[in-house]
Image (cartoon, rainbow, N blue to C red; front, side, top):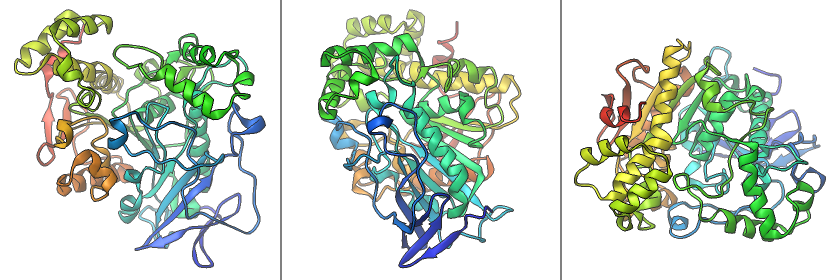
Length: 498
């Protein structure tokens, strides 16, 4: 344990970090420390700049309310009703939250007294989301012996714009700064800095794949969970097109200096107008992590296939019907006919022989549903299978495990859609914000099993099923109780092979 040990502040649990003492809240044996700054507010001279360390303070700083969220706009209808995304005003958006079993010191489960630590990186297409989303409450993890940390980072143009006069990947740099803060301070909350697992979903999972490939994140975590995201990044020149499109909308130069002078609400409006019609399948403007030569020296898929982070235990997977979150509420599943399906598949460069296999295997599904299944696999399942195979071929010393979440939500016929597993992983099915997506009768036994697997993986490196091997074992969480399946939908997977 470090010298920065947990203590009791007056009227609440206290933690002495390297910058000063924090006072949190305590309920049912779980201490929470909310809105803890890990870097200075990215405003003024620090806007569009790499994160700067927090300055020390005197006395006791309150940490009982979520800190400001990064500047953003709400999800567009109908997703706004399905994905609650609270907004907390303020400039100090580079903050994090900690939930920990309490008392924290000297009673951990590891040899040196420190507990397993999990650091959550939220999703939201790099333009939405925050650590204040109720579904991400860390109480259940702390209840089960894990120190849970959730992180805010810069979003949109301020986090992932590409400028000639500012560093790239600022949002990713924020995440690395947060992990460095965890490394230096988590012992104050009873956590083991050598037993850190990063986990995230969607854009958060894409971020983690980039962190796995980044030399700047080396040594900051031991294990990683990639949920419904894949290793992907764009070249600087390609990613810069979105920044240029926003600049054109604002009628300003595409420089950080010019953007820093623009009113933030106006900036967010232009950002929304530029990115509103983009999609991973059909293209369009979006914000992406970029290969910048520093944070990310090369494409993360290539780096990981070549053995980057081979020493990091890796758990990854998808939901069975990721696409339904976007296709069903918007009506795409009903509007897409055979001709439009073929047009979109050609635009997405899906081989016709591959599409033929999916159509033959799904004779009762609508063309829009077949299109969605192809999109799910092209963007997520196939890249993760490819990475698992690469780690197997290279005899990576760390474990690789795959899962699939298949329980189907009855809400709006969303099925086993994108983001549905989150309430199960966090064991927060009882929250109304979770039920917006799951409905009121989601199976608690499935949440108990899935949450326990994530806890076990963080503590031991083993989630409770067989490592990836040539038989392709995948733990299926639903539609019934968890069961190990070998090579699910193998004909469709093979249809992507050259």
